[in-house]
Image (cartoon, helix red, strand yellow):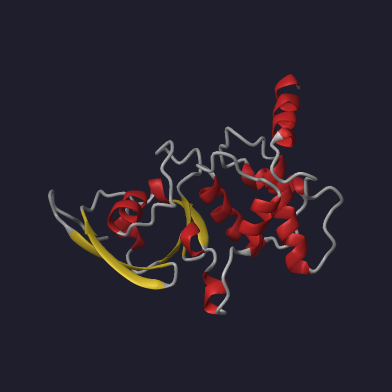
Length: 197
């Protein structure tokens, strides 16, 4: 294990969204701060700074992790993916537009203020890689590691299940897309049901 002295400044080299990047920081700098302040990946949001809310979730070597609980020096040499890189496959194919998961979130109005959305999407990317055909209960269990104060999660669950079905070439579940993608009534109704329970 490498040790550092007080006031050391270290250079961290990693791969961010498929591109080699490097920057300097103190050994105590959190990965979330390094990504945002040193590398400009501001899609990684910082919420609770205790690993509870999930807003800072990124993938580290393909596995979802809390960047507010990881030191930047721990990511040396790693491959980090953030929400800014979700459309990387489309760009590599010479196409414009959002990734399939982002499109499903848009279609299902699975975000409102959007603060938690980046972290949720990064967890979903890892989760769908490991479990390509999840049930609704499994998606809800995965989402239990994220706090969203706006949506009530229903539309997020729909977006994840829709993405999984599309990737497998399966028909979407009935009612998987709200009739009016611009409304938030489903999320509010779900929140009211949970509060009343």
